[in-house]
Structures are given as C-alpha cells and as structure tokens.
Figure (cartoon, rainbow, N blue to C red):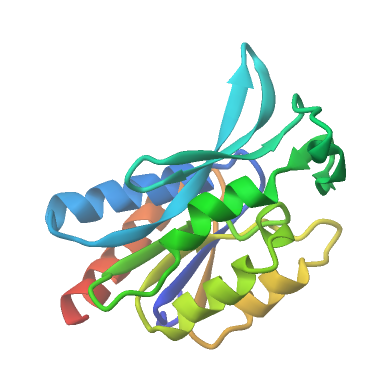
Length: 192
C-alpha cells in the first residue's frame, strides 16, 4: 500500500466482506481507544427466511432505516428509483444517513458503508461525502467494484481523490487488509 492519506476506500465483489471488515476494524479501534468519537453508517441485508428482500442503513449508534426493498408497493414507492429488483427509499436513507455525515469539530473518524448506486440516488449524499473527505478527518468507506469495467461517476471521483487509498478485498487478503487498515487508522488517530 502506498503511503496512505486519510481516506480508506474498501472495494471488492459483493459478498466478499466489506461491511464485516469495516465493523471489525471499528470494533478493534474502539477497544484500543474507548473514547473514540465515530460518526457514520453501514448497510446490511434485510432477509425474510433465506431470501434477501432489501437493505437497511444502520447508524453507528444503532438507528435504522430502510434503504431499499423488493416488498414495498405503496403508491409513492412506484416513483422511487430502482436498482435491479430493489426500490430505493431515498427519503428514508437521507433521514438516517445525512445527519451522520455532518462534520463536527470533535469527530475522530467517519465510516460510510457504502458509497454505492443506491445511496447515490440521494442528490445530497455525494456532496456530504466530499465535505467529509475535505474536512481532513479520517474516513473509512466502502465502494462497489466497477460493473463491466466502469465506475459509477461518484465512485470514480472518490477513487481519484488525492487523499484516498483504495484497498481491494478478496477472500484471501481480508484478514491482512483488516490489520493494515487498522494500524494506519491507529497512527492517524494518535496524530489527529
């Protein structure tokens, strides 16, 4: 890994463990630094039995809201944007995620999982992500791998940001990546 900036972007194929890695890094950081002030959110699957029926966004202090669903068919949901078979509830996402991305003086670390196609349907989301990066507060975020070789424009801008370090996960390097990201963040937080 090149000398990292303050923005770590975790990428890799769906199901490789990006969210798990981010949560494990966060748990390790909190163990070594219990007073750490972290803001942000992660996304997780919503399942009904064995079937994935959507995604929810969860803040680091445990508030939850719908991100997308295959099951909702209210009159307003027919106007929601879709990704595959999922309808994206932009208003619900924004109500949970955007307050978490407010830059505050005493924040030590931001976590954004993920900067993906569903989240980017929110026109306020990407500007908020850029404000976080430009705040110079360390950021741990996940981004999808390009579909058919092309990044979503917002994701491409993040990857090309001078402070960004891209960490591409696969099943064999996950544990080593977790340790690398953790040790870089510990260094940053001690010098923050």
